[in-house]
Length: 143
Image (cartoon, rainbow, N blue to C red):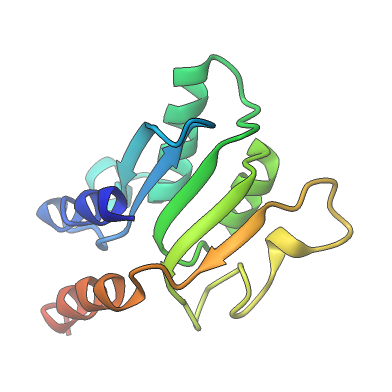
């Protein structure tokens, strides 16, 4: 999570919301790092989780990220939760809960939907206070 927080701190330099993500390989080494790039790249799907999953797939040479873990500073939205399911990561770890758009238990629970063919393990609330503080600081300066 500390690596994801370090990525999140890079996002505000381009006006992006400070959300970071990393993908850990089966040996728990970081294989991909990313932060939000929606503003920087004019990319509506430039969420940290999607960018990190894409980079991880490139790093391992296939789209199936079996044995990997997605770590994000904020609870993934529906798009990012869906990407985690489709990439076949074994687990999703996140920091702060997102009561407005969270799709890993808060508003929706995409990753544990029994109708889907893959359901990653979820570990929630890791360094949640630090993740929340980054977001609060960012939005305090934008309101």
